[in-house]
Length: 218
Image 1 (tube, helix red, strand yellow):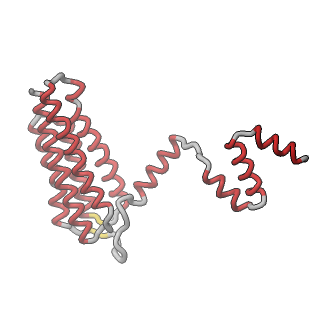
Image 2 (cartoon, rainbow, N blue to C red; image 1 turned 90 degrees about the vertical axis):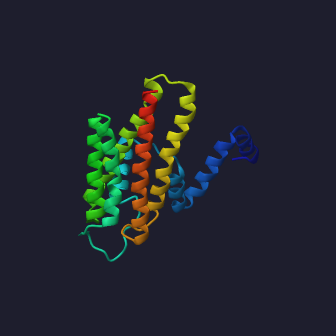
Image 3 (cartoon, rainbow, N blue to C red; image 1 turned 90 degrees about the horizontal axis):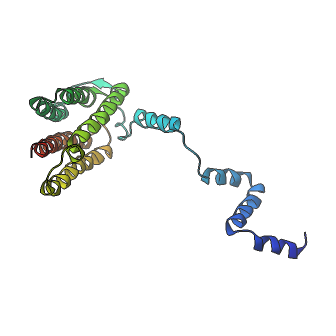
């Protein structure tokens, strides 16, 4: 091809087309480079892929790794077990308010939390169940705490105080959860961090639920 024709083609093509052409020329002479370029290209993700990755994330224990040399075993960890009972306070609150459906949901997560974190150590199946139940419970309680915003008209003064407070009460437990997930499961550091996560989550949820009850009756 004549030099002037090559130059015309380069001038008529867009910068993106020129970059693609250069990558193809380099890749044709280097198969490994071609594979790397393919990996860089965005790929579509289906709903099935998302569900599969979510299941895999839960199964491989997203909170971190277990400490080495410890086999799955059954032993009561009193400190962690007592911290799990913080969720029972929330169940009692909803029971006193006559919200028996949510009370039952929170009671279930209390049981799964005690069994998974404080009794059956290293049981992958129980850990999986506990995470799904805990996630579902968080969504149910979170919806119940904030639904006053769109189901009941309240004064602006209530909005100004209640909304930032409830958002803060949602963020605080997540900070403790992040700390727990950075620790090796079964280590002393994890025991204290995970116990604090249980306590703060229970206290913050009770406070947010009580505030929501106040908003409903204001």
